[in-house]
Image (cartoon, rainbow, N blue to C red):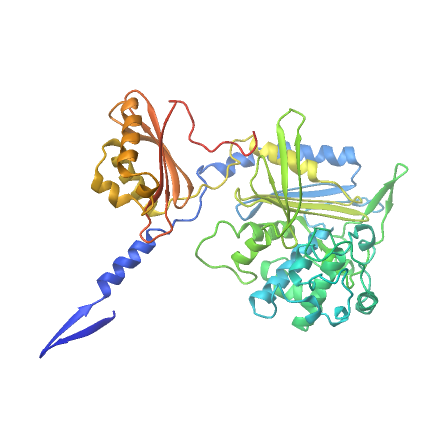
Length: 531
């Protein structure tokens, strides 16, 4: 407790600040909302009811696409809730896929590299806006495409905006390159397709360079750093960058389909380009990875684990470089929007259905994989196949449709700050029976400047009188965020929708107030994202 002494003559008065400080703290705490939460306590059991249909969907896809072996899993609220496997991991040995089978996941490896970079950033070892040449000397003499080009930064590499050309066909064949060979490539120069920081273009070379930064700053080979600092702390004991370390009884062999036959692809060894696409893993381990990413949501207090702060994981799952949008109509004629870009080692999209979808696919000769999750819904899917570029996107779309068909695929609901609940109660009183003193107590300084108090009072009373008396709150408090919400007042002859937004002040008060007549069956829910 802090205090100070006030001396007046011979008297000494002790004035305690504790009550004032406690009151101020309570006012500040009133603006802090609980974490967003799911409204349906039975959501998991309902979602599980779709698992058999999704199993059949995946089985049919493997048959129609001639995929020798597949494994997929569904993650719900941080747990791998379901795994399904089918087919053959080794055709010659007629060995079936099981839940321990290990597949290559190719470019999905990039998110592991991004985590390693953010670990080093959080530890103060680098800044994402550092010039890459500060940490990779071989790039010190790299010639930029224009005289006004900025230096390539780590952030450019993480978001595929360094200006290197798209290199998927070439990059697929570089996994076995040695550190010396990669150093020679960098010293020889890298051509640019665009100026750094101006466009999105997918670069495997860029992520290989990020892996070099991890090795240079940590003093460890990239594979060792990832294993010790990322995989083992997460319990991902099966995941590896080197196929030869996987027991023969667990390794999925990769195949391509040619002239009606499966031809086996070579298992490339781990090398300097491993950080862009060399990872191998099982459905269980990959489920842990998706759960780790989903655990970043919602923002909240509490333990953050040993690997990476939740805020840094959320940072990975934000758009840092836009890569385009499409607006089409689906087979039913409904509008279909997809817009977004690339985060750090992850793709981020918005659609008419989901505000945030985070995903990455992986494709190499012999393999194709996918991970996709909905941060606001707590649900994710992982899928792997041992056919070259196995295409899982359509299956994932349909799987989410089946989960939605249960009625339980709903997002977490924002929770109101205590002060918003308080303002709802007081504004309800103000609308049903206006009182100037009450109005002054709830209003932020702008409310009666934007519209004079008497005009606002008259407008609200006209709407209320038209709806009749005996107005009472009815139905849910629809909370858009901690400091914004709307609710229904059911009156004798009509309904009113009341909406408020609080100001960024302490204490928070009403900066926006709207009272509108609505139909008795009119929903308070937000309109769909696409119309």
